[in-house]
Image 1 (tube, helix red, strand yellow):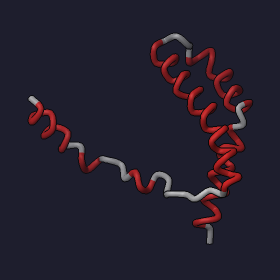
Image 2 (cartoon, rainbow, N blue to C red; image 1 turned 45 degrees about the vertical axis):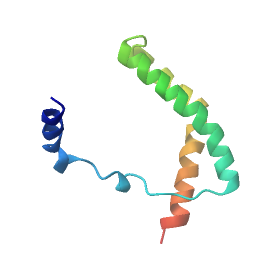
Image 3 (cartoon, rainbow, N blue to C red; image 1 turned 90 degrees about the vertical axis):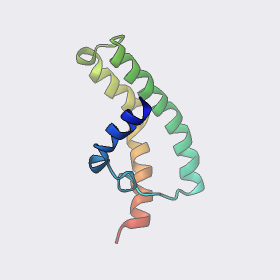
Length: 94
């Protein structure tokens, strides 16, 4: 059975995304790394938790979406994104 499943997945190989092009490797300063670690821990944990709640139906996507976005905003998501943008610009901006 494993061989059949493995062969079936090969049909999708041409459609596999190239993950190296999604976000290139970035280098952060010590200050950025420290700030990013703090932000990342709270933001990613919250996103994982809410994903599970939305999927299982424990949270209603229609009624709680705005609260979800507001909570991310309150967790300083904008700064989180800005750190990545600054590192990207530093390395790749011409």
